[in-house]
Figure (spheres, rainbow, N blue to C red):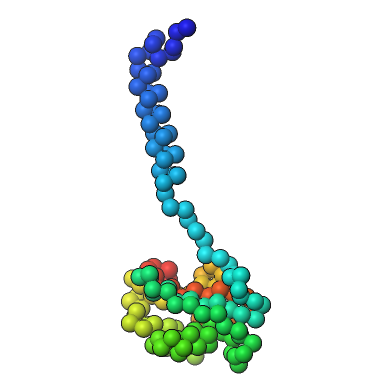
Length: 151
């Protein structure tokens, strides 16, 4: 039996090279950390409850579950104020007549233009309106993140 690489001297190194590349790609894929998507809702969140989290971008995360049926207002802004008050977190904001509230800082983490700013997501979807205009119905997961360049 004659092997093809014995007839063609360049075929052997090419096969070895391709085998190394394939092994590297497979090994890299297996060794890389899996991408975990945040849940769209938490198991413990009932239809009248909302989970709210502050992600400060440095490993510090504060969270709470709220029963929105106990509040007069059920906007993202109202529960944000409730969590901040409960945890002793200072929230600086500016209110615009027709646009609503803009969060300028949470604790010592202040917006710095497009470099880093506080933005929020509801059920893993980036919110495009002010937190004071986003009404919650219950069962949502709200995440405030101090992030770069989402504006």
